[in-house]
Length: 292
Image 1: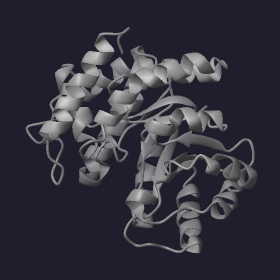
Image 2 (image 1 turned 180 degrees about the horizontal axis):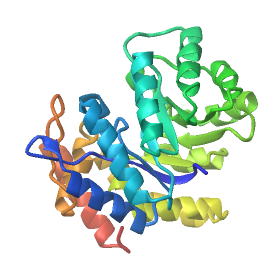
Image 3 (image 1 turned 45 degrees about the horizontal axis):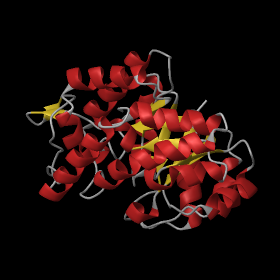
């Protein structure tokens, strides 16, 4: 159910408020471009700066527009277990198909603490995809802990943003073949799939959804050379979107495409000049090919 190119949706703002009209149109465009799944209110969606009401409303809109065509995996990460549980309940009430839950940041819990945290959230009764991104959370969900968590019937997969290709096989050994492994790193999504991953929760697919979907379709169909070619075309955009703090470069790219305004919320600011120049060059390169 959860596979392919899954977009970690940015959240558009206008005059400091959530731009619901732009978000609704953006979700429609993503679906029309062939995206296989949507993640509203994740890290890329600036979840930490959204109010509870905004968070719930964005999920509600996303579910409405998806209308069962593709799955909606709502962001529900927090370093407060009770807060993550509350967001999971709200996501369930608003019709999300699953939640994406990062490891608690700043607290630096032990592996036992991680296990208890994720189990408490999974007990809310909505499928959980773990999000392992130690570069941001400082803690790593070990493959052993992941194996224990995989035995919970509601913990169904992982978004792995470690960039470590060797983990795919290790996690399969601990979690089993049915545990869904999704890349959380656009740069290594191709290699992740080659090691047995089933897709990517992507930042780049905000900007180039058709190409990202086409690459994942090629991988699914065993057309690795075609996937490799598409990945090569996407590399300049992958790089450009992470020159400055994400999602500022992605929002700038989307502003050039007329999808939304370029501004994130504080403490993030608009992309710097270097990132803007790289984004423009990357978009021009894609436009010079077969388009995005």
